[in-house]
Image (tube, rainbow, N blue to C red; front, side, top):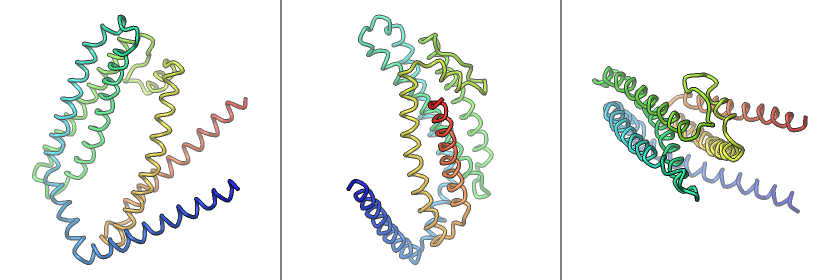
Length: 245
Protein backbone atom coordinates (compact mmCIF):
# COMPACT_ATOMS: atom_id res chain seq x y z
CA UNK A 1 0.00 0.00 0.00
CA UNK A 2 2.84 2.38 0.86
CA UNK A 3 4.45 1.68 -2.52
CA UNK A 4 1.21 2.54 -4.33
CA UNK A 5 0.92 5.74 -2.31
CA UNK A 6 4.46 6.64 -3.31
CA UNK A 7 3.66 6.18 -6.99
CA UNK A 8 0.45 8.18 -6.55
CA UNK A 9 2.33 11.04 -4.89
CA UNK A 10 4.90 10.96 -7.69
CA UNK A 11 2.15 11.18 -10.32
CA UNK A 12 0.49 14.06 -8.48
CA UNK A 13 3.78 15.94 -8.21
CA UNK A 14 4.43 15.35 -11.92
CA UNK A 15 0.99 16.57 -12.92
CA UNK A 16 1.31 19.59 -10.64
CA UNK A 17 4.69 20.42 -12.15
CA UNK A 18 3.29 20.07 -15.66
CA UNK A 19 0.37 22.36 -14.79
CA UNK A 20 2.64 24.99 -13.28
CA UNK A 21 4.96 24.72 -16.29
CA UNK A 22 2.03 25.16 -18.67
CA UNK A 23 0.82 28.25 -16.81
CA UNK A 24 4.32 29.76 -16.70
CA UNK A 25 4.89 28.93 -20.36
CA UNK A 26 1.60 30.45 -21.48
CA UNK A 27 2.19 33.51 -19.32
CA UNK A 28 5.70 33.97 -20.65
CA UNK A 29 4.49 33.69 -24.25
CA UNK A 30 1.87 36.38 -23.65
CA UNK A 31 4.46 38.47 -21.84
CA UNK A 32 6.91 38.07 -24.73
CA UNK A 33 4.30 39.21 -27.24
CA UNK A 34 3.82 42.39 -25.24
CA UNK A 35 7.45 43.42 -25.28
CA UNK A 36 9.20 41.21 -22.75
CA UNK A 37 12.46 41.42 -24.67
CA UNK A 38 12.49 45.21 -24.58
CA UNK A 39 11.56 45.20 -20.88
CA UNK A 40 14.32 42.71 -20.09
CA UNK A 41 16.81 44.86 -22.00
CA UNK A 42 15.63 47.94 -20.13
CA UNK A 43 16.05 46.21 -16.77
CA UNK A 44 19.47 44.92 -17.74
CA UNK A 45 20.63 48.35 -18.88
CA UNK A 46 19.40 49.85 -15.60
CA UNK A 47 21.27 47.18 -13.64
CA UNK A 48 24.46 47.88 -15.61
CA UNK A 49 24.29 51.58 -14.81
CA UNK A 50 23.52 50.87 -11.15
CA UNK A 51 26.19 48.18 -10.67
CA UNK A 52 28.69 50.50 -8.96
CA UNK A 53 26.11 51.79 -6.48
CA UNK A 54 24.96 48.25 -5.76
CA UNK A 55 28.56 47.27 -5.00
CA UNK A 56 29.09 50.26 -2.71
CA UNK A 57 25.81 49.86 -0.81
CA UNK A 58 26.27 46.11 -0.31
CA UNK A 59 29.86 46.55 0.83
CA UNK A 60 29.11 49.36 3.26
CA UNK A 61 25.96 47.78 4.72
CA UNK A 62 27.31 44.24 5.08
CA UNK A 63 30.74 45.45 6.14
CA UNK A 64 29.26 47.77 8.76
CA UNK A 65 27.01 45.01 10.13
CA UNK A 66 29.97 42.63 10.26
CA UNK A 67 32.08 45.09 12.26
CA UNK A 68 29.22 45.74 14.71
CA UNK A 69 28.67 42.01 15.25
CA UNK A 70 32.38 41.37 15.66
CA UNK A 71 32.56 44.11 18.30
CA UNK A 72 29.58 42.61 20.15
CA UNK A 73 31.13 39.14 20.09
CA UNK A 74 34.37 40.60 21.43
CA UNK A 75 32.52 42.29 24.32
CA UNK A 76 30.52 39.16 25.14
CA UNK A 77 33.48 36.77 25.03
CA UNK A 78 34.84 37.55 28.57
CA UNK A 79 31.39 36.72 30.01
CA UNK A 80 31.36 33.19 28.59
CA UNK A 81 33.25 31.62 31.53
CA UNK A 82 30.82 32.99 34.14
CA UNK A 83 27.72 31.98 32.18
CA UNK A 84 26.83 28.47 33.33
CA UNK A 85 23.76 28.18 31.10
CA UNK A 86 25.75 28.91 27.93
CA UNK A 87 23.51 31.77 26.78
CA UNK A 88 26.47 34.09 26.18
CA UNK A 89 28.32 31.41 24.26
CA UNK A 90 25.33 31.02 21.94
CA UNK A 91 25.18 34.78 21.40
CA UNK A 92 28.87 34.92 20.54
CA UNK A 93 28.58 31.94 18.21
CA UNK A 94 25.53 33.35 16.44
CA UNK A 95 27.22 36.72 15.96
CA UNK A 96 30.37 35.13 14.54
CA UNK A 97 28.43 32.80 12.24
CA UNK A 98 26.38 35.74 10.98
CA UNK A 99 29.56 37.65 10.14
CA UNK A 100 30.90 34.67 8.17
CA UNK A 101 27.60 34.46 6.29
CA UNK A 102 27.67 38.19 5.49
CA UNK A 103 31.20 37.95 4.10
CA UNK A 104 30.13 35.16 1.74
CA UNK A 105 27.00 37.05 0.69
CA UNK A 106 29.11 40.12 -0.05
CA UNK A 107 31.51 38.07 -2.18
CA UNK A 108 28.69 36.60 -4.29
CA UNK A 109 26.90 39.92 -4.81
CA UNK A 110 30.16 41.69 -5.62
CA UNK A 111 30.95 39.10 -8.28
CA UNK A 112 27.48 39.41 -9.78
CA UNK A 113 27.47 43.22 -9.79
CA UNK A 114 31.03 43.37 -11.10
CA UNK A 115 30.23 40.92 -13.90
CA UNK A 116 27.08 42.77 -14.92
CA UNK A 117 28.68 46.19 -14.60
CA UNK A 118 31.69 45.28 -16.73
CA UNK A 119 29.95 46.56 -19.83
CA UNK A 120 30.54 49.25 -22.45
CA UNK A 121 27.38 51.02 -21.36
CA UNK A 122 28.73 51.44 -17.83
CA UNK A 123 30.76 54.65 -17.59
CA UNK A 124 31.99 53.58 -14.15
CA UNK A 125 33.37 50.20 -15.23
CA UNK A 126 36.89 50.94 -13.97
CA UNK A 127 35.56 52.13 -10.63
CA UNK A 128 33.57 48.90 -10.39
CA UNK A 129 36.83 46.97 -10.69
CA UNK A 130 38.39 49.04 -7.89
CA UNK A 131 35.36 48.64 -5.61
CA UNK A 132 35.26 44.91 -6.34
CA UNK A 133 38.90 44.43 -5.35
CA UNK A 134 38.75 46.65 -2.25
CA UNK A 135 35.47 45.23 -0.96
CA UNK A 136 36.49 41.63 -1.56
CA UNK A 137 39.90 41.99 0.09
CA UNK A 138 38.48 43.90 3.05
CA UNK A 139 35.74 41.34 3.68
CA UNK A 140 38.24 38.50 3.43
CA UNK A 141 40.26 40.28 6.12
CA UNK A 142 37.08 40.50 8.22
CA UNK A 143 36.52 36.76 7.75
CA UNK A 144 40.09 35.99 8.85
CA UNK A 145 39.64 38.25 11.89
CA UNK A 146 36.45 36.40 12.88
CA UNK A 147 38.16 33.03 12.58
CA UNK A 148 40.99 34.26 14.80
CA UNK A 149 38.39 35.54 17.24
CA UNK A 150 36.76 32.10 17.34
CA UNK A 151 40.13 30.45 17.93
CA UNK A 152 40.84 32.87 20.76
CA UNK A 153 37.59 32.04 22.55
CA UNK A 154 37.96 28.33 21.79
CA UNK A 155 41.65 27.25 21.80
CA UNK A 156 40.70 23.76 20.60
CA UNK A 157 39.93 25.14 17.14
CA UNK A 158 42.80 24.73 14.72
CA UNK A 159 43.63 25.80 11.19
CA UNK A 160 45.12 28.71 9.28
CA UNK A 161 42.65 30.46 6.91
CA UNK A 162 45.52 31.00 4.45
CA UNK A 163 46.12 27.24 4.08
CA UNK A 164 44.35 25.16 1.43
CA UNK A 165 43.69 22.48 4.05
CA UNK A 166 42.00 24.93 6.42
CA UNK A 167 38.47 23.51 6.06
CA UNK A 168 39.61 19.96 6.74
CA UNK A 169 41.76 20.99 9.70
CA UNK A 170 38.94 23.10 11.11
CA UNK A 171 36.44 20.26 10.79
CA UNK A 172 38.79 17.82 12.49
CA UNK A 173 39.14 20.20 15.45
CA UNK A 174 35.36 20.38 15.94
CA UNK A 175 33.63 18.14 18.48
CA UNK A 176 30.88 15.66 17.58
CA UNK A 177 28.03 18.10 18.25
CA UNK A 178 29.60 20.75 16.02
CA UNK A 179 30.26 18.23 13.25
CA UNK A 180 26.66 17.02 13.41
CA UNK A 181 25.48 20.61 13.11
CA UNK A 182 27.76 21.14 10.09
CA UNK A 183 26.47 17.97 8.40
CA UNK A 184 22.82 18.84 9.00
CA UNK A 185 23.23 22.39 7.72
CA UNK A 186 25.22 21.12 4.74
CA UNK A 187 22.53 18.60 3.78
CA UNK A 188 19.75 21.19 4.09
CA UNK A 189 21.77 23.63 2.00
CA UNK A 190 22.32 20.86 -0.58
CA UNK A 191 18.57 20.23 -0.86
CA UNK A 192 17.73 23.94 -1.15
CA UNK A 193 20.44 24.45 -3.77
CA UNK A 194 19.25 21.46 -5.80
CA UNK A 195 15.67 22.72 -5.94
CA UNK A 196 16.85 26.26 -6.68
CA UNK A 197 18.98 25.05 -9.59
CA UNK A 198 16.07 23.04 -10.98
CA UNK A 199 13.81 26.09 -10.75
CA UNK A 200 16.56 28.19 -12.36
CA UNK A 201 16.80 25.73 -15.26
CA UNK A 202 13.06 26.08 -15.89
CA UNK A 203 13.28 29.88 -15.85
CA UNK A 204 16.36 29.82 -18.10
CA UNK A 205 14.54 27.55 -20.58
CA UNK A 206 11.52 29.88 -20.66
CA UNK A 207 13.85 32.85 -21.09
CA UNK A 208 15.58 31.20 -24.04
CA UNK A 209 12.31 30.49 -25.82
CA UNK A 210 10.55 33.80 -25.24
CA UNK A 211 13.27 36.36 -24.53
CA UNK A 212 16.24 35.14 -26.54
CA UNK A 213 18.55 34.80 -23.52
CA UNK A 214 20.47 31.98 -25.19
CA UNK A 215 21.66 28.60 -23.93
CA UNK A 216 24.61 29.68 -21.76
CA UNK A 217 22.52 30.05 -18.59
CA UNK A 218 21.00 26.61 -19.15
CA UNK A 219 24.44 25.12 -19.70
CA UNK A 220 25.97 26.69 -16.61
CA UNK A 221 23.07 25.83 -14.30
CA UNK A 222 22.97 22.30 -15.67
CA UNK A 223 26.72 21.83 -15.15
CA UNK A 224 26.51 23.10 -11.58
CA UNK A 225 23.61 20.77 -10.83
CA UNK A 226 25.46 17.88 -12.46
CA UNK A 227 28.63 18.54 -10.45
CA UNK A 228 26.61 18.80 -7.26
CA UNK A 229 24.75 15.52 -7.85
CA UNK A 230 27.81 13.53 -8.94
CA UNK A 231 30.03 14.83 -6.12
CA UNK A 232 27.32 14.07 -3.55
CA UNK A 233 26.94 10.56 -4.93
CA UNK A 234 30.69 9.91 -4.91
CA UNK A 235 31.13 11.09 -1.32
CA UNK A 236 28.06 9.11 -0.25
CA UNK A 237 29.64 5.95 -1.67
CA UNK A 238 32.93 6.70 0.06
CA UNK A 239 31.30 7.34 3.40
CA UNK A 240 29.14 4.23 3.04
CA UNK A 241 32.19 2.14 2.25
CA UNK A 242 33.99 3.54 5.30
CA UNK A 243 31.03 2.67 7.57
CA UNK A 244 30.89 -0.91 6.28
CA UNK A 245 34.60 -1.36 6.91
